[in-house]
Image (cartoon, rainbow, N blue to C red; front, top):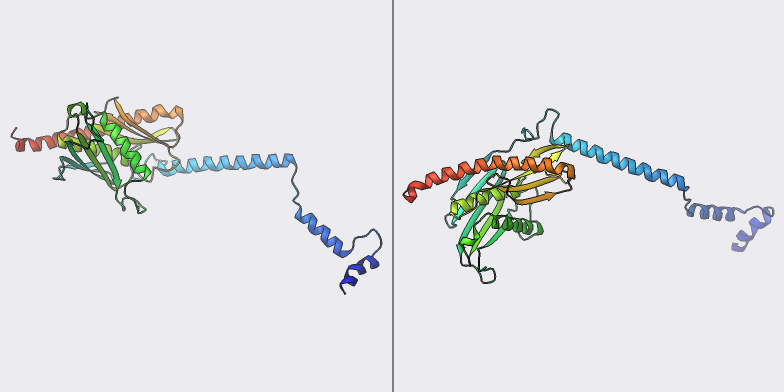
Length: 305
């Protein structure tokens, strides 16, 4: 029967015509071989995809700008682009530390404690100046997503190094050779500008500890949306597409001690963002200076002055 099934089509059809079996085989082979479009068609498809991708990117940028700043010029929390959040502080909360500060910058809440100067470990001891050691950490419930490691990750280590380098330029380390100062910053609740809040809280904690400094350091995080700078960013505004700069100065002047850039920023917008950040640092410094003066007046009767 199998032999008849293979030979019968050849006998029933004329010479030169395909049998049904051969026609099916040739059709399946033709379908299995992909037909490549002409080169001009491929180029047109690539250009069309690129145009669609650029259009989507522009639409996403415009949508992001509209979501951050409304058509009436207000942000999501009701502030103007150049308006900072409220700052509330309390000094001297931790009695076991030489200096401590609890700072609320909007909904961002930071607790900072300073220990020292004291004779540190021999591995970190410096002959001519004091060693500054910072540790940055966050609570597991500080953000929208719970964290398994509150400290020790790459981001926490990077922020700790930034704080160390910044306050090495602020503290008069030559006054305490062969000693060590430990700074612990913990973000209890993070709602944007966490690094700037830690700098501000550390400045007040050092002032509470009575450690001599060049001045009170103030910091702010600023971004830019459609050539318009916005200051004191929240967590909803700190997106992956929005370029932002964290800047810290001494006494609100032009002496910069810390600069951190997140995301790519066009060079034409750099001067605009830096000017807005410097102006914001000056505003934050005025708030911190008032807090330090009030705390000093409250401690004066205790000191007998």
